[in-house]
Length: 114
Image (cartoon, rainbow, N blue to C red; front, side):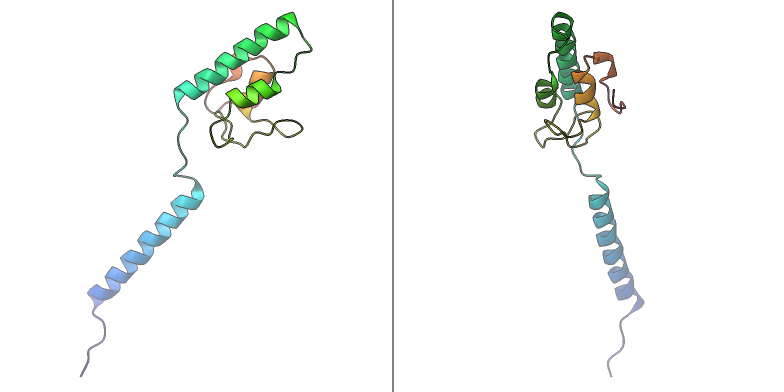
């Protein structure tokens, strides 16, 4: 006569299911997205300073293409608010918008859009 599964086997199955569910929730929640380095934010801030200097000499200069390049990571996300930046017509992330406005003081981790 065969016995049913022991409570230990049920416990092992339950742990495996909970571990799998936890991993999926973390993955979908964005916990595995790469962190932005301080050097990336510093580069965006420097680009904002450059844009500010250029705009003093030529107020009609469009810094957006330069700022989108300088304030985006390799995946095209803004280094400040992790939003996808769009060059031309789309919405800019917080870093690119502050950069394009020539406001380096607005470029910091977690900053709102300028």
